Length: 504
Image (cartoon, rainbow, N blue to C red):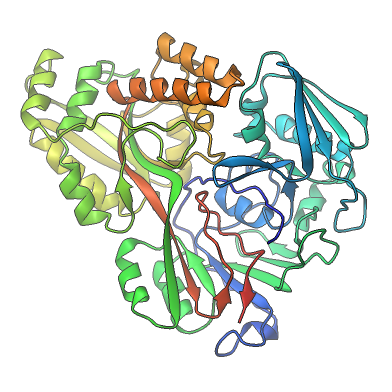
């Protein structure tokens, strides 16, 4: 077994991009895997950056690669936080966390790992002002009493400290200010970057200075193949060894191919439709509840999402810490019409729903099915399919009525999704509820993890009952491997990790 490394959830990020080609070493071709030491990977979304401290700190393609290169102080394994670069930690008081780093750890260039590197890495994530910076708003000071001790002091108790640290990759402090470093970065992990062409390809080579079990692979070569048909053909023609994120309708045929292995597994990701609660008619929770009751989700999910996931039982996937089952909304058009009438819309209304191109499994078909059901209760929903950049711009400006997307609780901890998206101060969906704010902030500052789970169950109940959004599906991940690929283990973050893989 290799030493544990951070596994992140995913963010379910997708888009329609152009196919690009990539060349590989001679040992990547041929029939079968025997004798090869390079794993050929086709990733479904482009890797545009290898800098995990700023705008791409929560980007799925970036994290898929950097998890092989960098390590973190702690990791999440089987739902539990375990040591990684930090061998132990203590809480001298509720506002102080003290970490002791492992001795004898070096970066790939031979430089020893010290607490200064850990401090600089945490600070880089904060200063990068990317999507994860807000997780560290309570940090008051970061100290390094000696080369193996890191002390983080907070302005208020931070019960999410350990889960937050699963997203902080430790790099050499001397390199973090040099943007050219991220063209071919290295850390303490089992691989280092040999070459990187943004949006096209990445090649990793084995880090022979790695302190853990030596990887059997010498190289991992990633290339971006956006088209589903292109990735399927590449699998069938023995041009690649692994890909993932294929739609359910492609998996049945691939399962019948005895040259391939298809693995599906639960993830931290889910499908949801948000309503802009700051814009009429969605300011009234009865309208939002009516939208949910109008949908025949059982029929829709069976038709469109076979093998793609399981019906959601709450606003968080069940694998996430803090998730709790809620009472389901039944398909009840009569109840939907009653709620609309009570809210002052007896004849329904006209609205819009936006989503980004390629955002979601069977997204267009799902939108069509929901729009059809809503029309049956008098709600006319005009579809707005947008390019991702336009969708994201409008999303952040709250310039929308409703939106369909997928998301991932990448830390595996409820705070990442619930506090980040549903606090009134987040301004992500127009919803503001002082009672919910109080619960979420209390959960964030609670050090007792059992109590935190109870609080998140309360928060989930409020979000679900108020129908801030519709949560139809907890998503499954899938990976397709050629038969010669051995030792791959899926994790719920849906970020395939290949450091333990060999080619038989």
